[in-house]
Image (cartoon, rainbow, N blue to C red; front, top):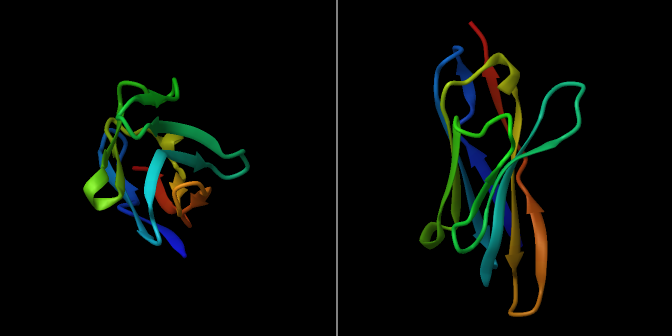
Length: 120
């Protein structure tokens, strides 16, 4: 069984920063791409940032230059450093990862989410 557990969410004022973490645990052979998504109230879930196993990164236009995704392969953990936060960044943030549980079997896993609220 594989689990993704997010942490680091909370309430922050506009212009502030937060760092999210997502740790994968369980029966893991290797991890391919990892990503962060978010879902605001009344809106569809959207992709925020992705990072490949080799470290290549992509960002949504709305967060580019403010957010940084990174990963620690030794710890099976992905991070999202969020700076210059805006009220529009308020959402539940979800971790996603493509995980090989055997040499040939890859599944997509989701965390349960962590709330980020940007408000004064």
